[in-house]
Figure 1 (cartoon, helix red, strand yellow):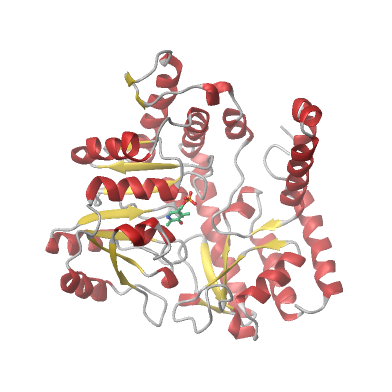
Figure 2 (figure 1 turned 90 degrees about the vertical axis):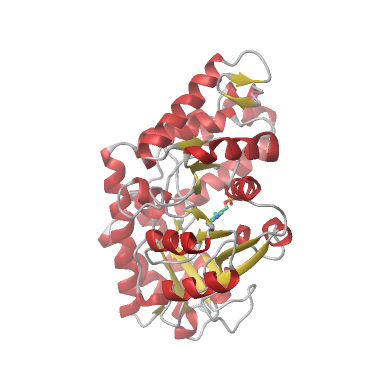
Length: 416
Ligand SMILES: *Cc1c(COP(=O)(O)O)cnc(C)c1O
């Protein structure tokens, strides 16, 4: 429902109402190229805003600590069944509150503090929760790392060498900023050689896997986590999938290990999103995300931008702004002034700092949800070039912003 129709909030809390209204306008009028963002359907939004938020339901269906759970159990069981269908996994826990807590639960289920874990370097595309020193994961566990090669690809022979040398108890495969296919089977073979657990964090690409466009780690890996709000296009949250033999450990790690009561209104919205992802249209959506990303990458390459690994297999790409004599931060700021959101990002082997890195990360899930295709992506690529090349020309940036808004009006956000 459009925010303008919120009668109660408008009356009781005009400050928050106004801020939400303005954010709705910002989202409507601007292009979202942040690779981790998306727009949920009106049905997902409706489920999130329900009285299910009033309920406490610590435990799992049929085994709760408080009374009055018949409807909550229905919701959670449906959500679990849909995850199993969507990803073809043996066991699913849908209670994780978000990606990072889901990963905390995975580590808790499989490791003891101090155990060694092998994960992708953060400055080569890994996630904070894969062992960054400022994150719980880096504080509690001893992370060792693999990275990408100069060509931007992970070399699986190198991963094997490091695994054999370091003997981690777990290998983490997953990323926030890597644009190439993952060789899940090879990761599993390497882990088996050293007796390590396999953990895939598919937070970014879950929707592309569910939509049948990318290979799935589920047949091979012991445990898989994903957020539900990125390409999967559900509410903010996460799920964990695993082989049956680890089901008890995972469930215990989520509750009572990591979390208290589940967020039942969010879990209902997850179920709604999983149903949407099971429809044939979602396959078309996932395929279009990748098509759009490939077009965006090739257009930018034609305009003289350097793309890490020279292209993409998924929904995202890293653009090295040094190819245009700009920093990532300068590019991010110029694009924001032009009505295009993205995030500055380290590129592999970056010589600059994390707060002022060389690159930006771009992704197509959100613009694809708005229905944009090749024609619009080519327009967007042109605006990116113009904004970066004229980053100091405020009137140029403003005129791009006006064109962006005109395009956005023709491709409204779902439900608005
Ligand atoms: C986004 C992301 C997460 C964290 O998800 P939050 O919901 O922000 O906590 C974890 N792992 C990867 C790979 C991600 O991309």
